[in-house]
Image 1: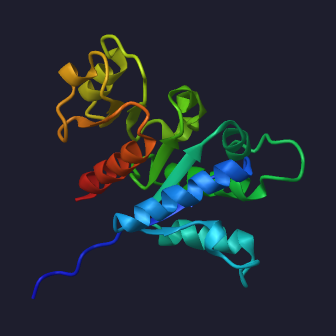
Image 2: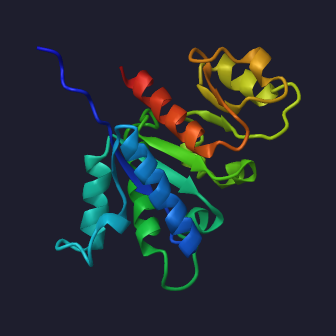
Length: 199
């Protein structure tokens, strides 16, 4: 009897920056579901969960095989716990739980995958998440020194198919390339890269 197909469980950690951003995250989650991933975001919950949001968040992070971390300016501030005002408590808690998990595992976890909406967002990846893979969603890249350094350390590179990167990168071996601006494809390839590293 053939094995049943595996549907990796993915929780998406993001901040409620705007209605447009929430719609983008919902679209990303729905596209991943169509690709066979089992995804969870807070938008799928009607009202407040019975156990309350803090326990729901912790349960989702425990349930997930992968946590997509959508890196934006507000997310970065909230992840680090430096957001002013009353909003952003969910991301503040998620940041603490993700950081604790990485601390306990001595940063040997492949569970947490940064997602960038634009090349300029790379600086918004929380420091503790920068060691898992190298993300280069550049529109222009000359030689690709950052990619070369990552490959030398056997760190997978997820990059745009531009500049000197296609000459350096071996698709599926040292990482993956996507068309310029195709963040959805880069996200799928980053998840695939993490799944491959687990097996």
